[in-house]
Image (cartoon, rainbow, N blue to C red; front, side, top):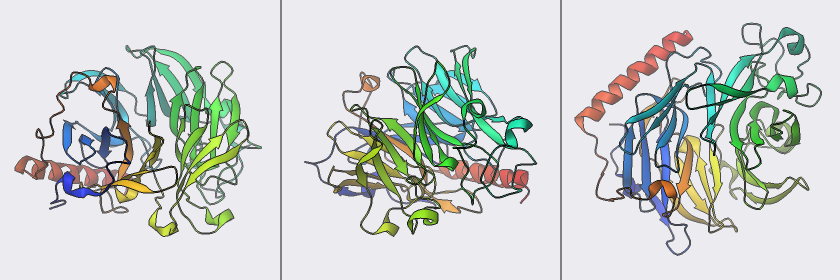
Length: 392
């Protein structure tokens, strides 16, 4: 069996007087469930989705779940983060809205006006491709380089705004990591629409986080080269600083051994205001995905993706809560059986989307039932089909 423990047994640290109360939302990679869990490890709600996650899920203020599912086979399977289906379902899993685009990837954002900002792969014109620097020579994807575009879409799928990354990035500044492929220039793995309408984004393979002016499309602020190493999940804090999960991949090119950390950056001074990393670098390291979120009590929630680990730290770096996911699934030849989680999100007890919902800690107790065994076999077959599509 891929897992035998209940989720409440997987809380390994719980300093009740120091944690931020509320609920944790997470979607184990390679399986079709999304879970909402309280801080004691009890499952409050479970959504059974029709697709494995391309990335993560978020709980909207209306109580619905917004989720990006991965449709197999993907048109660009090597690129990572490909989705294909963006779904909105209600508390009970009933479909409310869906949007299909084979090239959407990684992240999305439901805006205050009801529109949705999506992130999608686009090919780069040849005249721009020739100017792109960095990466391993000759590793273009079938002779081409791709980039990212943002699209703002209405509830009916109408495109009301679009940003083409390659039109606004600078080949002289935005240089690919020298030991990465030249498949994608920028490789945006997170986006957040800010209060002023501008967009905060993470450009993974140029080690840069940036704020994009929605009016002009220009990158009005950028930070990271020489500091970041293939980061994820940039978010704007209430104090105007930016929180980012610095994965540490290829950090050894500039700063010694690989290790992960979480940074708070002041965009006005470009200085690091706060940092979390483990005293033992090998204890906290994940080369992919992951997230960080500043909580109302000043603590920070961190998701260490490849270890299936979600934990809460104080400003002094003390770990006051920790959860290790028991939800293992066969992912691929590369990852094998894994309990990876793309990201985790915290919601306070007073969150608008939880009002009027049934928050019964006795409603779910995870047990591997016969239908779950059948579902696991179906998902293993889907993985095998994907490997065939990739040519393995």
